[in-house]
Image (cartoon, rainbow, N blue to C red; front, top):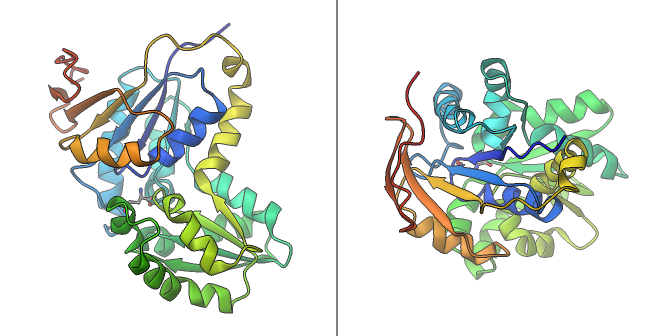
Length: 286
Ligand code: DGL
């Protein structure tokens, strides 16, 4: 039996669209609902308890829309709140850490893996623990790169300033001799070319979004081979959608259509950015 319910995917902002893109490329027939908590980004500099509170609300919004699977695109949320979410909601919930860690262990030849991520993800040691759990012999070198998120949001993907900052962050990992580097933050795949140039062509860069997409592809294989979803995907944001749309269109394969601003604290849709008459209650409390 085909399950036509959508896949829910969420992130602190626009960066999770790198994960959305990876899933869409693998599973073009799946309908998806995306939530970007653009009013509260960044999560990566916040405390675990704040990230958990925000993540709980984000997930509640999507779960109430009847998704069949929830993808936590955000590495920071996956690092500190995945277990809380999995124990709070009945729907299957997948994060990006485990698939990224598996790919890193498969990829490394010299047993030296680099992880670049937000401060919160690095402090949680989530990638390190997941990698060590799979292979205790692998050495993990982690580096927080907090300036990468605003650079990506600004669209400075191959700017001289980005290269300068990237060199500063990445030099310790080059010195450590890593042969595999996990892009452990939703935004970093956007800076991939700059990062690859600095790390050298021989270093394998792993996009955790692509890794999770491959895993979802296996789980939903049958659905993916079914009919194309009739309705378009829907994108929700918690702040004005103009910036989101502009950045999204920089890197998505197709321009985004339905973009709706929501207040997930009041738990109802406030206004419609897409001009498509979608002014409606998304769900009711309780
Ligand atoms: N989505 C976050 C992550 O993948 C990056 C942006 C943020 O700090 O909220 O860790």
